[in-house]
Image (cartoon, rainbow, N blue to C red; front, side, top):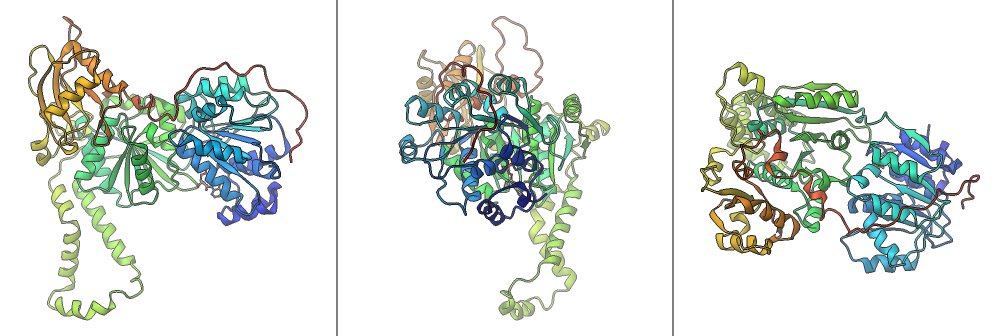
Length: 613
Ligand code: AMP
């Protein structure tokens, strides 16, 4: 099937030809003709990156009344980034059309400009739910002519707590509007929205339910938890052309892993909710433009990052929810490209892999963490390949060749190869010389001594780092140790730390014991009963330290016991450290404060196909 077979006008065909789209993707081939012919609601199960935007965007543009400047289509999506992306995409499809006005409205930016643009008149509104509801409540938008509502990435919107906002918005659009719901997964909550707010929905499934993209290969590596970071380094080293996202569970872990990668010489950046919107935008831009090779991110912060050519997605920890794994892995293998989804697991997590395999109906391959020698060989061969295939460029080096030849006249070809390779890879070869086997089974087999698991689930510091690192030690009686995500490099001092703790926890004056400030973290003791209140006070209030939002969690070795109680149960996963995974889902990734509102009343009107312009 070709785009010309879909019944689109020449202007739209010209627009998509300019973008280089030749054949419709499966979701486009199904959805576009359906929307052009029918008025039924649609529920489409489609992964991210399958071409959904054009699937709903082209019919909207095809049937738009460009003579009117009243909103006719409303597209709701979970994040500001996705919102801007969809608006940009629609504008580029419509590049050869006249009189099309698309407006993106999202939280975290000046509402006045958005209100002004609305009053000038637009036909398509792309919005995040919180900001849209704000505008509706200010009565600054007229939705009486809306005849299509798109809920894009519905599962993500519900995950982020937008259900009530969506219901309130749906109650403001005419009952006769056609509603389209796109979702990568179909959890109960999404099915409920479909049931309550859609009529006779036509179901389209592109790929089966909850199935990861076909083009993704799923791999896993089994290591001891203490070796997680070292395994990550080796995986990155073994793929010299990697362009990928490493997913972590918490902001603190994300920052630590990114900091360690950077310290170890990798081109990596963190992306999480502690960064300001500006910092996040800048990181995403650098990553999109390939100026950053490895992005270390939390699930929430990475939402809406639209990148098509990721070679790898790495699960530094497996997520708890299957849907999160599907979303993570669906970020690679997009737009017809191949991708690899990697999970680094420890021995007791095999069952999690089995569960995901079963649910996705895909086989996961267990891979061995490459040895130092293998990595050295891979990197050498990659370099040799680059040299062999280098086409010489436009002769920029020619002017210097004679001088170079003279200088190296007495060195043999073999020696030159050896020296060039060594110069480039000396540090790597040195680092991996005598490096141990990190595969969990291997160390079991070799009877390797099991070190105490001090750095479980966190990057293991190198010996150089250890000097700069906080060593777990004996606690003062009655005290527990907390860890703050800022340290010396953020200008932290004991005085500042005490002030921050007492400012954050206004309800009480906190007694602080020993303080240890290292490069990127600060450790401090508080009395056991006060620990949780201090942690909570930082998560509730916005305390800033040189541009970073400060957060506090239990330090690894000092979980409080219930007063007079027994030891806490053995730790199963990093969640139980007191660092709440996905904690950034709470506030600052969400664009707008939400209130409740009643659901949309009644179903929408029936009737034959509506007349569209
Ligand atoms: P989406 O799922 O809409 O975010 O699209 C994922 C990516 O695929 C985007 O970068 C689109 O530009 C690209 N894309 C969408 N449709 C096509 C097509 N028919 N042919 C080639 N690329 C496409």
